[in-house]
Image 1 (cartoon, rainbow, N blue to C red):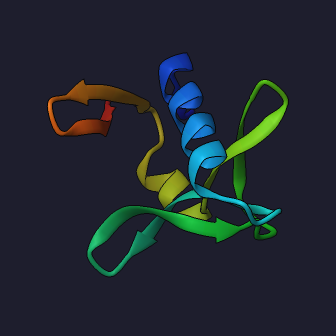
Image 2: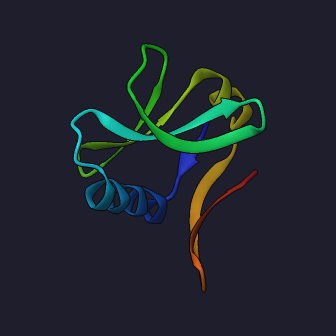
Length: 88
């Protein structure tokens, strides 16, 4: 099971509100040739949807879901901005 902290959910929601003006576009954690990445995308049939305050804020594709099984996704603040962190 993938856990997403309240802080991470709130951060993703705020980023969506600040950056995206296109309906249906969300942040996605997806598997790429170089590993896991976060990028903008639309909902696909096999996505896991993470919500905050009744709004979808993060999509996780099937392959990334398998990689992230039994982890917690969080956001940490650093001098140069927020960073997504994952731990088991």
